[in-house]
Every structure is written in structure tokens, then in C-alpha cells.
Amino acid sequence: METNEARTVWRTWIPGWFGMLVLALVNGTFRAVVTQPLLGETAARALATVILLATLTGYVWWLHRRRPIPTERQAWGIGLAWVAMTLTFEFAWGRLVEGLSWATMLADYDVTASRIWLLVPIWTALAPVVVHRVQAAHHPTHAG
Image (tube, rainbow, N blue to C red):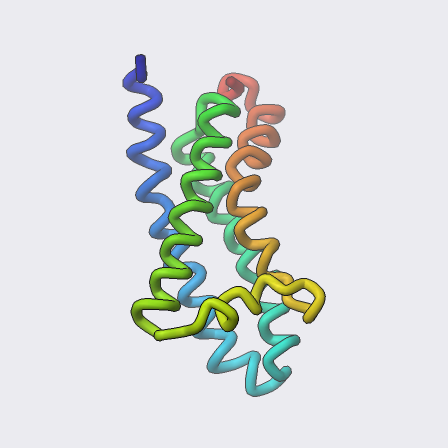
């Protein structure tokens, strides 16, 4: 049976994904407008990935300080839900709005072509767990 605490966590963290979406959209716009003309596509995409990983970490840290995830199991659930939401949005937007081919969309995940975007969904899954562990170690009252 789900507790009130668990429902509160989900009510905070699932909508919290939209904050991550805003960060990603701002980051992508910055890449397209600022860094890509200066650095070229490959370097700009790599830099954008690193920037997004850093801002995502800060965002999860901030969100966890405001609404701590009580258990590591819930942190895993949130991370996996966020990945599912991210990939669904990314591929649905690419196909339905931008009309991109599957090959074009999957190219961002080709590490053999110096694309490191794969780190974003991996970190999206791990960030709530890592932040939960780190903050729980420093604030044992939030440990679960």
C-alpha cells in the first residue's frame, strides 16, 4: 500500500521532470545559437551534454533539498520514470514535430562518432539515486 509520504514524493518529482525539460530546451537553444557557430557541431554538442549534466545535477540537488526522496528505491523509481519520460518526449518530438528519421535521432547516441548524449539518459536515471545517497550521508534524518 502506498503511503501519503510516497504519494507526496511522486507528486513532487514526476512534475519535477518538466523543470529538467526546461533546462534541456534552454541548453539546446544556447548550443544552437551560441556555441555551435563558434565551435562547430561536434564540439558544441559535447559541450551542451556536459552543461546539461551539470545543470541536471544542480537541479536534482536543489529539488532533493526541498523535497527529499525518503528511500533509495523511490529514487530509482523516479530516475527510471524520468528516463522513460525523457526518451518518450525526445523521440516523439523528433518524429512527430520535426519529422526526423530514426537514424538521425539515434545518431546522437553513437559514441563511436564522438557523440556522448548517451550520458544524459544514464545520468537522468542515476542522479536521483546519487543525490539521495550523498544527501542522506550528510543528513541522516533523510536516509531511507
